[in-house]
Length: 391
Ligand SMILES: *Cc1c(COP(=O)(O)O)cnc(C)c1O
Image 1 (spheres, rainbow, N blue to C red):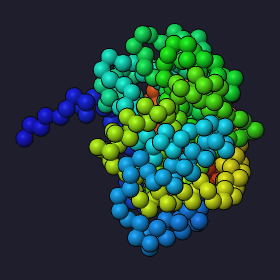
Image 2: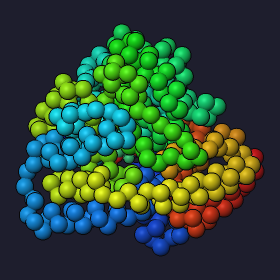
Image 3: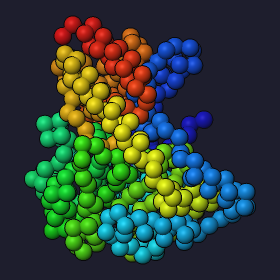
Image 4: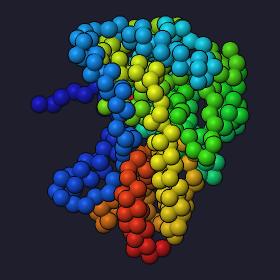
């Protein structure tokens, strides 16, 4: 049978991360000793009080449809979080709870972009952004950055990329895949340009709480009422509360955009899972004691991995100030990233994600959301692999 696939679906690139990941999983299943640096999620368990709140909701029979945009209690708890932590005032009607930060990103793009629109995305980028833009029928416009600027876009680069068709600028700080963090001044400078040019900003702040070395972030929405009016903040529970499998995220937007996204959601997914939302309330209103412990552990691993990577001849790595990734430069090895990762997996049984997946072929993404023992073993093997190339 000759199935006709829609242009939209056919335009998507297959996920390179999944190719390496499924190969690594198959090797593991065959009993091979694979070290995985591919994880895009914390290796810690969801804190117990959050699980308890969800279990209680289930036991209480909280298992029916809720409003598509989330239960009032959770929308209020999210509005309170923005007030308390970011000094941002949102009404609960401006908050839309979703089935994950990824779902929120998709709905923002779908509700604001269409054919003929351009969306500016700095590379290295989270691999879903350009594909979501294509699904909306709009055009991704990529700004290249390198480790020389810590993978940060300069105001001049942003200005040069804006055209009359630019609708949205995607800002992700701390960043997946690079871990880089824009200072408040740098964030403001980019926001100023978007305000001046009347470009909306989708600010993906999902790694907001994962910061090291005293790094500080300030939401681009918070610099002035005009910045607020141009910004949609995407956030979620996946990273700072280790709730990736719960599928729970949220966004905060100017009222008309929130209303449009509510409508999109009401006709596509409907509400995020009812009892997961009760877990979300507990995550925001309950103890945050887990976080400093996780940060201390992440920080220790990051420091070790960063030093070890830089000790390998042919590899250089800027230190990341956020998230749980390092993005080493492998250009001196003479291999492109997909080839590098395929051979690394084959030869040394180490799984890393090729930079090409994020639009940056001279790099790898190393996730340190895995045990210190794994990091030591995996990086020793990476060292051996690079030396075997004889460069
Ligand atoms: C993990 C992540 C998200 C959201 O993930 P969900 O599991 O959908 O909540 C959003 N943006 C970036 C950059 C991420 O790394």
